Image (tube, rainbow, N blue to C red; front, side, top):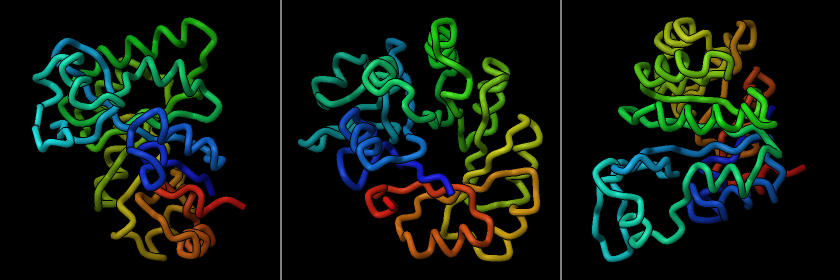
Length: 222
């Protein structure tokens, strides 16, 4: 069973930051997961929500604000390229592209890395948005795709077939033993997110769970 750091290791450091990603590596994750959005001036940044909220409670829409302005409100806001330089590819990078985010700036960065010494297997590309996943598949067909599905196994399988994805990530609150065992005998890997209970994770691994996306990778160290 793969241990995947959720937004780096959001339970141990501020999420979607270089510090959180390094914390995940420190605790020997098998993959690092993080979220991407694109600023008004086309900079690809790590951020989960559509709006950035600073310590004073001010909210700025990421897609409607330039990167330098966002950076003044959140000094640890990291760009995708900064992360690739700082973290490298010690483990595969599981990149979630948020729905409605333009794919071209993201695919350009990945393609530049692939033209150097990076390989397709260093990345996984996922989204809850099927439209976004289709665009990612069209732009980068040889990189593994992850169907991120909140609750519907039927929809997840349909979405996966459309983009030739072999990995499905589902919200752990909707999973049960019969569902997990069904995946065990299919062509797909099943990841659960966010799952922070190692006892439950080990039990589910026995049923066929392939990966755990966790806020606390330290709890899963052997």
